[in-house]
Image 1 (cartoon, rainbow, N blue to C red):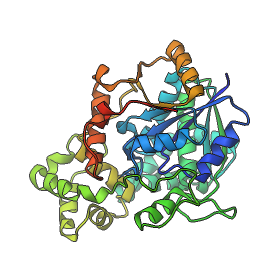
Image 2: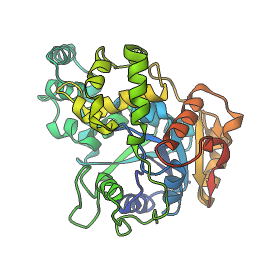
Image 3: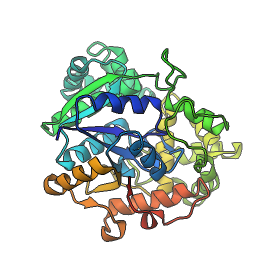
Image 4: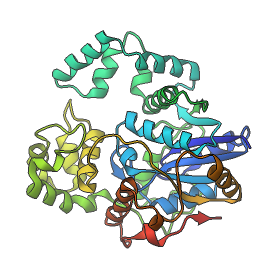
Length: 373
């Protein structure tokens, strides 16, 4: 069986995602996904819960869904990609990793990844200088490498992730082959010429109560919609009671963040506080991730993946799962209660806190079995 892996959020699963799966299945017998669970990389709660998104993906051709632990899904591009790629490799069954990119040129992306991996001392020094001038790390990195790498590679969101995926595969000396294709819609735009919409555009329509049935192949009409702003009071409470200690053990959290957030805490919602706190140095995604890691109690730096959490499968996926049980280098989790590991405890807590963003019960990780169709 020839198997492709996809790293995704499916926030939500839409027509572009379905088209991607159809393309992949022209060349592969099975597709499994490593999907962010309750929270996503840009620092937000997923608009629908992970089981709804799993069901949508399975109904549209994905064969098996594994959950990306929240420690990785709420990380910068580098740690997100590293955790996800090592999960793909740990499955033992992936022949290729397929991802979208604006460049749609695997050679160009691979060349850029080589340059980034070999970061010359003068580039490292330039990044430090730029950071000391008060600009964000992504902007410092883009500027420092500007004479070596095309600007679009370090500014377009899917190109950035693509290079991180390739670097992670190279660092692991993995036999998994990276394959890229073009996106059907701009990352933060509306519609492409052939009618596909970006996930961000669809989320805006969902939050505005608009119909998305023509943009998504799955019926989300009766699904609970999650809203990050329902965590506002919890965030304010933690800022007031914990002060600077709230961010003390969170990687990349800089001193003074508490005072910056508190400065704008009377504005209203979580999103309004974050938006007002953005500076040349602190991007919105960075602040979102730091704040959510604090709320979720995710402390410490990068850790190696410890398990493969199954969220759902179809008939082909169950065959693939049987093969994984023979070849995977990580334990496979289908029943949460049987696997009390630290990273899994973080995911359980993330699910419970995400439930506060909707009207669902806590403890769902123990109550909901993997979805089988």
